[in-house]
Length: 152
Image (cartoon, rainbow, N blue to C red; front, side, top):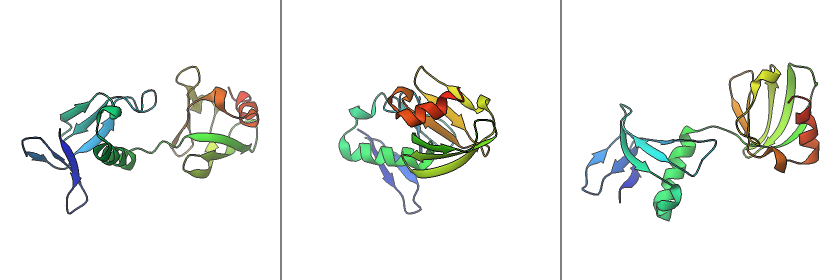
């Protein structure tokens, strides 16, 4: 099995079973929204795939923790857990939301910035280009669903 380590400059280094080292490497999810625990690739600086991992559950715990850290350093996709308030039901409107990373406030330019990826997964783009995700619309509280229904 390969290993993933940090070098003295904080870059991720892939150490292959034969001892060959590749630095720097980047961890990328194949489907970050629809299958976040599925395929992950470790890529070299030129974008060549060095290692493919079918599922994060296939990787031993200490290495999985380092892989998840490498992925989280590259990805920024806050998950909206609750809508606190919306300034107006006409756009543009300011949304105050509770995410898995804390409370956030953003400006929604138009209804077209809310995209349904699957039956229950939504992707929301704010005016600054930051993407927010709602993983399961049906699992959200009644207040949040009521606010979202005005825009869907």
